[in-house]
Length: 161
Image (tube, rainbow, N blue to C red; front, top):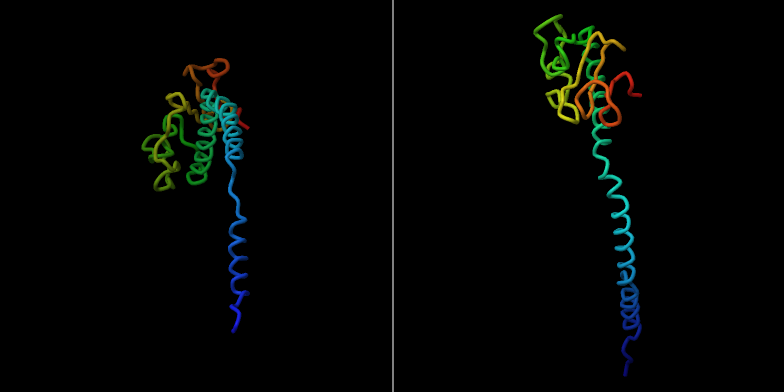
């Protein structure tokens, strides 16, 4: 009589044993991770969410820098900046007043196709020629009036680094 092949049976046990060694996270490990994430959320969230005024100032600076770039492209195409009368709208629609923009780019110079208001819902103030540079762009801040302190302070393109 022949003995059954034990080698096949042993191989099957080894395969089974390999799979049974896989471990998942224990309940305690999961609880520790949840506690750590909760502490981080309680500590970090108020720091991020508690600064809406500062975030509005940053957005106004970024918008002004975007308009500066668009104005420089406008000048490259047309040899001049839009006049104060033409305003920032010249970046969106071809000006029909003042000096002609002969090489005005079809589609304009702003991706969204409109000049956004500042973070507080006010128009940006544009002067060309500017008092401080070839052009000046200003947001009057939270109060919407020239001057001011802290969040009411003006944001000017010539002061942005």
